[in-house]
Image: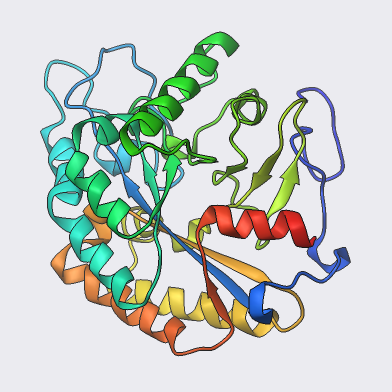
Length: 310
């Protein structure tokens, strides 16, 4: 907690655990790598009140919301809205097609607004037996430190219940918009029945988080593989995106002979679903697919296995 210093961290959300001291983890079929692909379907608000908090985005720098500026003031952020809307109208279908090609069941981080207003997208995900993960209200309405605990609890409930109402399934996973949390978030998520959270990119295996009630595990997105992080913040060439995924996988696959590791690939259709980018994702996943010993799983499948076998 603030003001306390624990070994390796300044909070009590989880115990510090060096990977070399843990018991060996084995995935189903003795796979070396568990592959989870998260597809983010997000609504970018046309406009927001002037006092709306904006994140210092971990994936796109200080401008926040995908590196397209806050858009607060007298004019709506048409560029930001249009780019995200492109992902929901066009790009997502390229992304889903590539995942279909390699037999990857998507884990879909869908915010409440998309779930309520895009039933066509909900149906497309259902066709693929996708797992739905709660993803806030919109990508611009985020959890922030200025929220009271009651306000944050209401926000989390609204997000979960909106997604459940639209999909017919209550989500057990959470991915915070812009990876934003407060000091209260893990406990509030666990109290609402969420069993895993994707916001903590500090490990290559799941781990248990400390909560007063409920049960919560971390299934951290590999932030270095996030398409927004690489393309918008890292400003890497698109060919480098493909090579980064290949190299990361090769390293995990090599080290996975000792203990099971996971690769959580986070995709935004408005970024990677562009015609000039999608083939690089295709080629990267083709490389992964050529290897045996890869378990293609959803977030829930990975966490459930970990709970039962660690």
